[in-house]
Length: 498
Image (cartoon, rainbow, N blue to C red):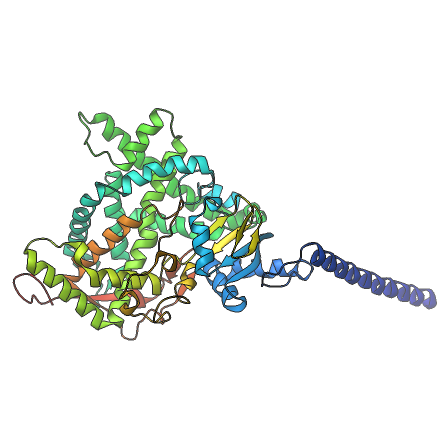
């Protein structure tokens, strides 16, 4: 009875070897066929019978979009072909290519997981990732009205008032070791400013910030996830809840706003952003879901980006005390001339510092687009539907500037052509809040620096704190290194501190 079993085992072994050989041959044929049908002269990882797309997608999921983009550009050059969720994606970091995409109407859509965007309410709604171009254009007009024009004047007053109010209450944010969670302080300030500018309703800032933080974590998590992720309940449900919690809060705040409007005998001449959207909904211009998402995106924008930008700037000031001294001297000089208020336009050193900070260590260092038409970029053919990542942060460190890899105000000693410096983008899908963001950063920094100098913990620098770079560059917040000591400035005379 043993011989038949032995023979059978040999037959099975032979069949297994033949099957393996046939599979290898089939994979080789598939790879050869793909190489011939889809020849690509664009540098990047090999296709390898489908293994290349899986590995590149895995890197984006595991390390984050920003980190992976930097890895591939540094390895393969200024134009790289990768795959995200099976879709061909190009990463561009050369200024001519970046500028072409930013200015072109062929790239006014963004890409991301449809199910992920539905989870966070951005699929076909709001302004940030809305790829329904017609609806996005309609919504953008409301954002533009709120973020430009006459509103900029009131922005300065509100920024100064809010920053001063929270600095007056600094004792309640100081721990027993006399340190302050600087990033949390800045978030509280900017969410207060956003509410006073765009919503104007009573709210619990700290509770709202927790929900904004959880929403942002969900946004980063689901943006490029595969469809199967959304079918795994224990993985997906907590993110779905986090997104829904902030949407519910926004709905509640909007209901409060509607009551305020209905009970008002006369509305202000300068209608705020939320009021304009509520009126648009009442005449059928926008849906209730879109109104809620627009208000949500307006409220979360500053805590997500501007407050972290300001935190990075405070860190850079302490690493460059000569720059802080120049800024304070400039503030004193301008205050000395007026004796009352500061002309923010005349603060050239401060403006150079903000620009150099945004260049050297940006919060958002890339933007995502999708080609709506066939195009050619720097001699490379782009097919309709191709995903594009513009690695603007890397572009800022490889071209034009005198000291591109160093933090140095010398980089802005002369006018920088816009094609080489794009902290907010340009063209039809540029950041609609770029002008008000500059005003807010100047007003908050001047108010803070006129009263305090800040000192991070000993040895704490931008390069020493742990950071992630997925949707944006974020400091890891479970560390004590984010705490700073706020030291009051000694008045140097009748008009200013030193």
